[in-house]
Length: 410
Ligand SMILES: [Zn+2]
Image (cartoon, rainbow, N blue to C red; front, side, top):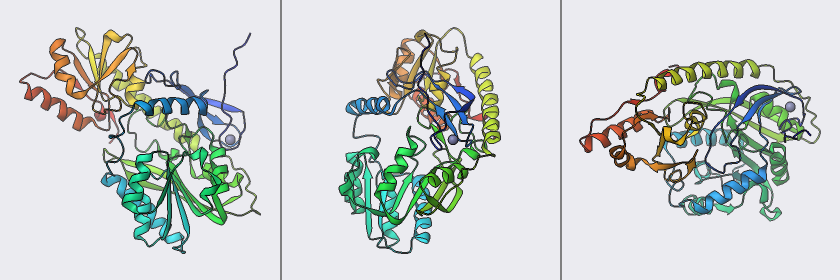
């Protein structure tokens, strides 16, 4: 009897045939449906690179719905944007302002968060702005602070009564969704005749240019890896003609560059797009994997030098910690402790170990000392400072603390 493993077809062209590029494995929070990892594959028909995860949309939705019941609504959202976020939204708004002449066009920002993009568009004189977001808190903030229409819906349950839009923007969403074609279908139904769609995602062509942490772009959230070619193939399927696609660079928390691909597309029911094979992407991804592997091996060597007589504590439980915890370095719960300053993560469990808040570090250390691994590369400097201050305040000599951002190419 053979076990039938669910597979994803190509999110762009729906072809089944694919080639495995690499296996990605991570140890996620208990109950996360993507535990067990997935293969990163390339479609042999159009060249698109994606996560061949067996997880279904229902399983993902159920996990996040259950999770949100227990999450503290007062943290995480509502805090407004960082300067880097704001800079990115300003660039997007300037671009849209240049290409959309009619300032009374009805504009929908899907997944509008706190309304940052809508606010910038309002500043350009757009008068007919609408936000949609699954979070009620975001909806309320957008309504109050931007002063525009805003509704609470998830992408898949927007009713027809929402009406039609001349412009729809969808930024940093498509890389997350299992069913990409269904998503475009939804946009297509919401768009007025001769309307335009703006989409933006991380640009897989440039993952190799700035490595934020090894294999960082292959994670439990980003499961589609777009390029300008795949944007054209995807939208072309739905008879959208390219007005423009390009790469943009913005800054993230660590002040590192982050590349995004963006595109503006116009519906043209006479348009027939010939599917093009993405010839350039594979060598870019291969190079990214090769560099990631090199960095990961340096990190393993560095961890191997830690004192053997005590456990290690991981500080910063994010995508890199998930990958680290899957390695044989952390075999049993006796081997490690977990700390994170994000209260959303505190109390969650990985391999039977509960995540404690960073403020518990000293109390725990006094009970039984440990070495410290800063498992967030992006936030290494502030975390190190935070830890050193905690020890100093308590008149304790800090233990060995290792971080890994020095292994990243500068
Ligand atoms: Zn394909």
